Amino acid sequence: MKRLLFIFTLSLLAWPEVLLSQQLKKDLGEMPHPRIMFFQEDEKAVSQMIQTNGQWDKLHQAIITASDEIISLPPVERIQIGRRLLDKSREALRRIFHLSYAYRMTEEEKYLDRAEQELLAVSNFSDWNPSHFLDVAEMTMAVAIGYDWLFEHLSEDSKKIIREAIVTLGLEPSYNEKYNWFLTATHNWNQVCNAGMTFGAMAVYEDYPEIAQKTIERAVESMKLPMKDYQPDGAYPEGYGYWAYGTSFNVLFLDAIETVYGSDFGLNDVPGFLETAGFFMNMTGATRLPYNWGDAGMGANNKEINACTLSLITRTSSKRIESEVMIKRYTVLSICLPFCYAAVLMSP
Image 1 (cartoon, rainbow, N blue to C red):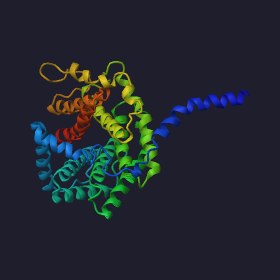
Image 2 (image 1 turned 45 degrees about the horizontal axis):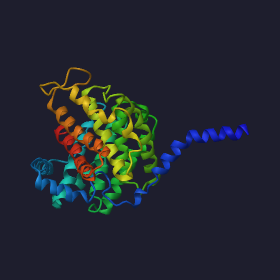
Image 3 (image 1 turned 180 degrees about the vertical axis):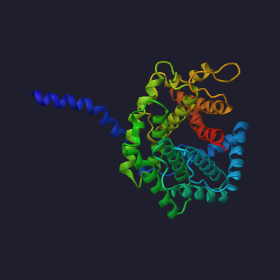
Image 4 (image 1 turned 135 degrees about the horizontal axis):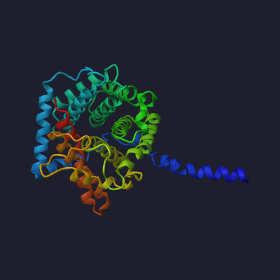
């Protein structure tokens, strides 16, 4: 009897993980592309916003202008600076996001052709520098977005090369104990790396369901660690600069899993997270510059990134509002963050 009671007690302790795993068993392989952030039906909503909202029109035109400029540049090359490849990962994210968006909104073949060229270029790198795993995370996110958003238009040969790169250069290294210490970190590395791996997993799910499923489940559990640091009132222990970095990717991660699974698995309920916009407000003075505390950059970049982060936090908070119109509106806003992050921070 004691042994049965012990086994029953252990089963109760394990029940939350079992339940989470069952919730995440939705077969993404049956879900059509694009399935990451910007669905097919969102294109019409964004087009309407461009036509009726001057700010959205400026945003759209800025992406198109940037995409035209990218076409004149050579593809991203694997040039490592010290121990980092991060500037190349960020440039790849900037280019692939811009070009993929530009093709979907204009259907001009020049954007598709160049996006495919960029995707193949980075997919043929020897590696994405796993010794500094932020580089892998941002590159995986970049390639996942391009692969997912352009899936129906890429050649079969290209898709094979790209999805294999996502797995062998992105997902698989994240299971190497030399590199995956981010899983137990309580700071921006956890948020950025788990977001990048989740995007990669969602993109290739139908071809690599086992590693993709395991990666998404792992991320949902691991993300709880840095999100606890927003307690109790939304402050971020790393300061203003890394708040923007970590929170941006955290919200991208939440948007990706919510739009696919219809649930945030309780992550938004972490005390302080939905109040973290107040941290931005209280860390900024009348000059719109941050106070000199922690990683508080003085440039305009952080201000722009934080504005985008705030818009997404507002979208996340809107899930508490009983209004489908409001929720849909802020869901569409979710494409703002990668654009602002890429256009402002990652521009050469």
